[in-house]
Length: 347
Image (cartoon, rainbow, N blue to C red; front, side, top):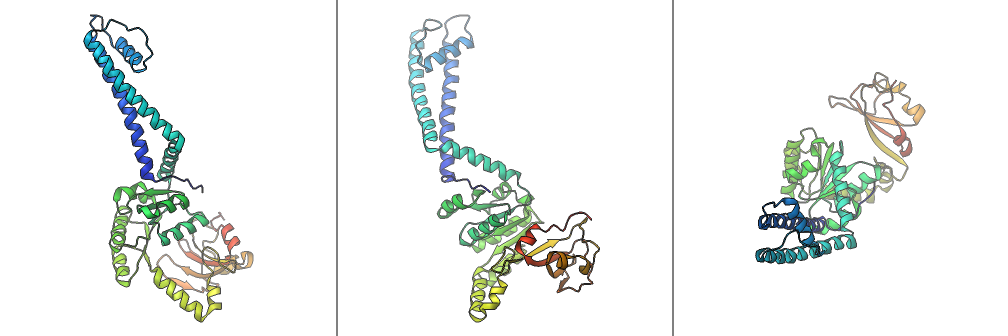
């Protein structure tokens, strides 16, 4: 995934607005001047084409001959048109020059390209907040190729956001319109790393309302906040401080055990990884016993647990267990093998 670097998105929008204003004023000057010359034309055969011609030779100050002799009012009107148009053109050219010199035009085009990519995303994740926790989440998503969008509005994180995140929106993640812009209705999950308890609870409620089926993971800094987030609709609540503290305590007491537990879904020190795979219809494993799946004998992958569709979890399942459609297999094996494994090839 390619990271697109921008200045502050707010600054880019201000520059874009400034260019739009200058061009709009220039167009307005041309329209008003055309109408004015048409009204001031003393001839009975006055027409808009002549008025438009008068406007362009006046605005461009090319010095061509007038279509008709100007009255005193017409001359005064021409002076006004030349003054206003000259100021407007100078301002417009200056704005365009700034765009090309500072690369702002390229930035705007890049941001629009980013917006188009965001609108087309499906089955992606939304990361709300780009503080220390949010940056780690986004980094891991990027490393394993998980499509995601980051939402952040704090000025102190904007620079890191523009440098490290491939797709982002500078806005408040608790805003309904912002979540819709991030594609929450077609998203697979949302990870809230917002430190504010009130904002995190509100975001969870909003996300659940906009997409009842979305998987919500929220950060909490206390047990009371954890309970509120679960009541608000979060599927999982993670307390980074508690998890970090327990890991440090366990490392100090049983370092060898922790080295073994370093196995995770992203790959650890031992070159092993954990993975979960949901068995869909058409999978080559549907209806087979675990013994006949050849996961162990052919791929050297162990099934350490099977979660049935009704939620029943079979830890260290028997070789005689039959794999059914909708089962979720928890696998452990070599990282590269798991990455290449495809259990949904047709039988």
